[in-house]
Structure formats: structure tokens, C-alpha cells
Image: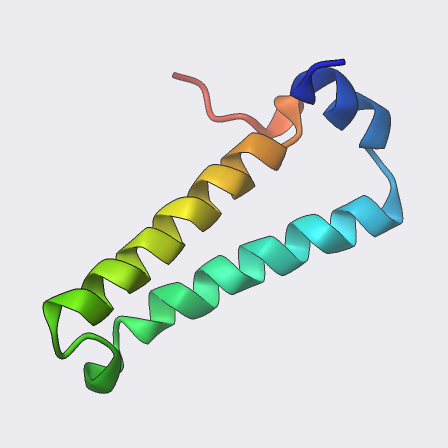
Length: 72
């Protein structure tokens, strides 16, 4: 089974939608962390935060409903 096939079988399930929303919310929390000077005051902290955001963005994109995908 591929990820797109698995996502189609999960489409419309309330529990899966909760997971998707949670991951999206975590991404938004990380994005707001860029406004906190204490969380970006050195290159290591900034790199960690950027890595977290990048990973969450990839997960959000991978879990999107194929009907929701942005046209290229």
C-alpha cells in the first residue's frame, strides 16, 4: 500500500482529521515562535526551529487530501 492509497482509506475519518489538525496547529505554533527573541537569539536555536517547521510542513503536505493539493 502506498501513502496516497492509505490516505484515501482514511479520508473523512474524524480521528484522522483530528491528527491532521493537531499537526497543522503545531506548525503554526512553531511559526509564532519566530516572534520570540529568546527562541531565535542564536544560530543553533534558529536552525532547530527552522528544522521543526520544515519537518511539520512536509508532514502537513504529505497528509493533505489529494483534492486539497495546491495546483502546480
